[in-house]
Image: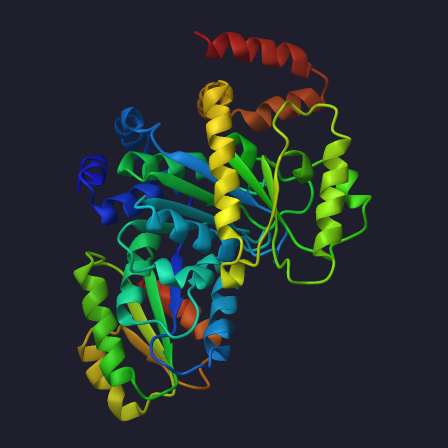
Length: 131
Length: 310
């Protein structure tokens, strides 16, 4: 059987807007991935633990509240700490251009901002995921 | 990482990796299962099934919590459908189980059906064994939202709970064949809605007419899972069923049948694989000669069987 790409779509922090996360989840499903969606208002600890239990290849976070400089690096740290050393970690949402270099520095492989074509997200995952 | 050894030592990442190996049919999966098998057979497997939106995930969370309060550890396999068109899936059962995520005594794994039609994935049984070997006391298997005839859960579970909700159809639905025949117990969720009592009556009527019934009559509990109401009653029913089937040998019979079915399944899968290997590259030729009527499928199969059993 082919190796299936498993993606955790996660909403860290307190904003209650998950339309974007759901659109991404749907696009990834249609690309043939298994998408685990855990719902709103997840702590970094919950996201990392879910990533471990589900043995995902990708963690895709969405934040619209501005808390990304704190939460994205925290999730990266905790996911790596769980031993998921190969998992591809990406983020998206309302993220100012100026913040992106620091997020990448912290281990977020790519950051997708509003207007991104979902096909680009799929392509990025396919090209960078480690199975 | 030596996955089986680490799993048996209590490493959660190893458990997770083992289930991935099982699901993806990695080469090492057979070896892992071989090492885990002697450590299985201790967990009690509870199946939760019912139509989409009946509240199976919410109920699973509440039931798991209740077992945790009793000091038992819990493993959960939550199955959601895989798209037959793209192979993708949205596995959303965890949304209802967030309160369990950080409890180290609980391990939740979501699985896509990946082409299986019985309400489970082909690999659910092996994933259950991995959780069992890991040492979970109770394993809850939540099926996909089922329609009427996805009844594989009875093969995997010791006790099967059928979750129903009011307003899904008239009483003729209750006498049809399928999932209503497999409940060791029934639970009416969202029982604060209109029609709950009527539904209980209809299930009772269906049970009254059941000529195959043993001296176990499936009890019916009324639950509002989202508020946790009635979960204690449901759990009491589960315990009643458990001691009933433990007492009269039925649990033993179910597990014997499961072991046999499993052996036959693995054997068939092995034979199928062998057939594929043996006929590799020759299939087109066979089909051609059949079309030309140079031979017939019956003689061909008989020849090939001879070849394979050598």
